[in-house]
Amino acid sequence: MRKKLIAGNWKMNNTPAEAKALINSALPLLKGAACDVAMCVPAVDLAIASELLSGSGVMLGAQNMHWASAGAYTGELSAAMLLAVGASCVILGHSERRQYFAETDETVGKKTRAALAAGLLPVVCVGELKEERLGGQTDKVVTRQTRVALDGLTSEQTISLVVAYEPVWAIGTGLVATDEQANETIGVIRSVIKDMFGESTANAVRILYGGSMNAANAAGLLAQPEIDGGLIGGASLKANDFAAIVKAAS
Ligand code: 13P
Image (tube, helix red, strand yellow):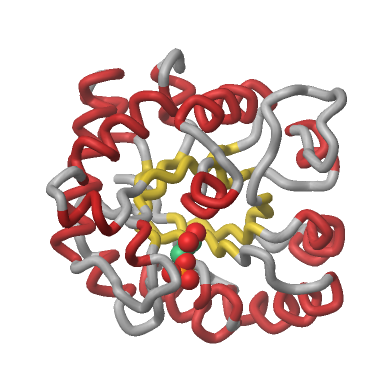
């Protein structure tokens, strides 16, 4: 049995003061969660979030990192920096980073290998554009993204990461993939992992769904056999909504 994971992706929202208020209202509601929970916050919120989440069982995550360990990379953060401030996971290859910041399958792969080597849990995002789904290219796109991101990893490393399937057309649009669409494409991703690393690895890897997941549709998505949790954008910014999704997964 794969333990479900509900991870909030705050994106570019919340100052440290706002982060404090949100975490303080969410934590009491998350007590007793029977699934894993993570909050992936902006870099400037990591320190305060680390302090507030300490001892709560909620994992702290970042939203990006560089693959190099240090150097002349203005504006970037290393895995060691994230770990030092208390993060234990990091979102990599989010479609917004691919779309607006020129992330490629190859850079996502480099980041994934660097995060694992440093001991961070990578949440590797894959997902097709609307045109790609309409053109029947979904399986091909997620297969390529998954293959390149996981290239060169061992089975042990693969088991210790999380993949998030986020169809780009469903992100922030209110257009959620149907339970069946999400389940089917996650099944395709799992079969790619099986092809690369074997059946037991594929059966152990957690694959999340992300894209307009909310308190109302979470239970249906999470009941699907292939869906091991959610990567939550908008609904993670409201303590009650996030807690309701965690409850649906518990
Ligand atoms: P929304 O839940 O706001 O659609 O965002 C999903 C997402 O991109 C999470 O990483």
